[in-house]
Image 1: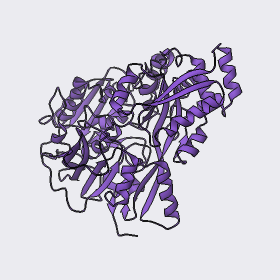
Image 2: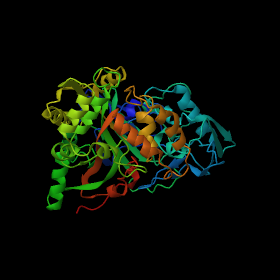
Image 3: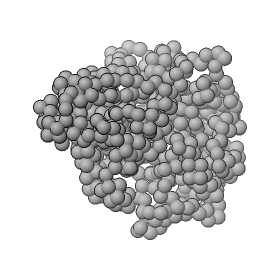
Image 4: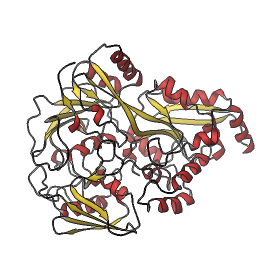
Length: 533
């Protein structure tokens, strides 16, 4: 994922717990049905704007796409190896991983009744690459030279270079298959007209400030796949702030919330659950979601490796996790998180515990005048300014830094400004496209990456990454360890933490535990409604 929209969520400042009268509009989607009844409602602060797979590349859009569109492959709950979805089978046809062959299931249909064929698969990839939306995921399929439809059921991917990670990429929402009779070849389709072949169809979309505020789904009667739906209707509501989501949860307006609640609220709910109080419960688990402090390496100050290394030497991740995030996150010591193949603790191995004397030595050896004046910028965080205020305190306590913390509340402007090199250092979160170490390397530390921080290491981009993505055995080789060690030494970005999942739901909601994992896919179909405890 080399596009910035995937890094975090789009801002919609006027969106509140309930949509204001006169602010919202409702779009009925082709083929949609009644949105009433006993729908299960989920809340999230992962606000988004675009839902067309060719232009959608953030957590808030992929929540919808993973449940309304099929890809050739999918990640079952807890799996790190993709399995067939719209495909009956897929395999590389040669040892060079340059050609990938898939055979489709029989009888596939879109929710409008149109047949889904190999031509639609080829069209979907060709369309995404042709549109090449700057906020879309087309970069994930950069190694695809062409896609050939052989009859209705067979698809051949011809690659420009060996890419053993292609199956995982196709299993993400970037591999969503669209109806060639509905989606235009050269531009994005309006959200109100989306058609997929997944477990659910979109019935309606309510909007506020030109962004979805509520998406209503119902079971897709034409779906053919492995998902077994535990509900017939599902509603996703978007909230701008964690406290608005919490208020809706308390008021019974939503049945469950994803990992969007303010950390102390989530831990209090967990404490109440253990004490037998309240009507809420928490499903905990691991995730592949990470957060980094990114350095603009073209900046005169942040571009000095010694400055970045000194910051790495002073950062106390344990205090950040404990004092700011109430232990709803865990310290992260590498660009690749725990639970992902190849993860190591490169930053801890190099810097150990926070040490002001070591940081001072690093700066002195590089003849850096102290205190170093450094600006830290943020846009969105579950804890607001508290995250970077603690980092500021840690850096300044050494006497080596003088730090200013600023917020850019407009997320789109934040993206544009970090691309333009306007910031010295800035925080961004990362939600994985697929559970593979490459998804934290190629998009983040190759040729400036999605963070546009201007850093590149020729050994990583020219040798280690090309060599590593050739390996069909993703556990083989030590390239990812070498890459992580190089990143820890250069510090183009500073890993802060890895999210834990604290999904909160009403006591009568079932199935949340079955879908909380590090694949980054939340499966609406696993969620059911039982009797109140």
